[in-house]
Length: 178
Image 1: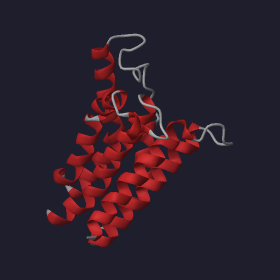
Image 2: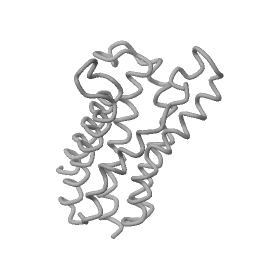
Image 3: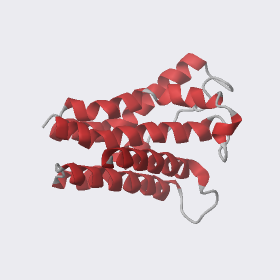
Image 4: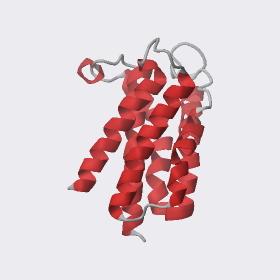
């Protein structure tokens, strides 16, 4: 039961804070770098709590906010529209898939190093799903997208949810394969 609560908390936290990172904050007095750290620290708090709960927390986990932040600093190379304005859909899909994998790679590498492949796999899969989730967001029913616009804004929520799911699932899988 507690694991399900952690999964829900991880998904919701990462989804909403990823939207904040993407610009939901509007013109608040802090910029993208701070917004990226807000997302990273929020997600790290959940994964650290989950790891402590299942008894596998380690000092290396204090680096998770920095690893998560590192994944966010690369640009999108004009791919957020997925071929709707410029470039082709295939090019943008490939760029976004690579971008998603690079987003999750620093944290997945550390999780792999300390907990093994089974714990890192959900993060790798979340990264690989980036483009597909952003594409899905373009076709999301209007009822899904409130208060977010369809397209990139909703994509941030869906991709954030996938990363949050992977982050929160990692400690549970690590504890099962320890």
